[in-house]
Length: 142
Image (tube, one colour):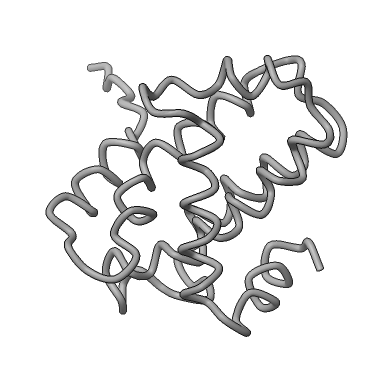
């Protein structure tokens, strides 16, 4: 008897988790699945190497970390704001390290990548306040 392995679809799980969320920082929170997917594509892109690859891995690891600065288990979708802050912060760093085409190839959404990631960054940064330093510390980027 063989058991077929089904890899988890984290993006689908995120979509279900945030579906119907209507609250503070809604614009950022509703993009969680797309942002995660963007970083997952970057991780599989062989043009992303060295420090850039480490930054991408840090974002992906933080997304799946259960006990982060704002735990989703306690806060629901609002708890994704620390994950999104890290993603937005790292995106700014990656824009200095990677060619624009590499980032554009990983972004598969209809909406403008720069505008979407800026909204994610601004809203999540605002929500976190002084906790931003804790997010960067937990992610190993401080």
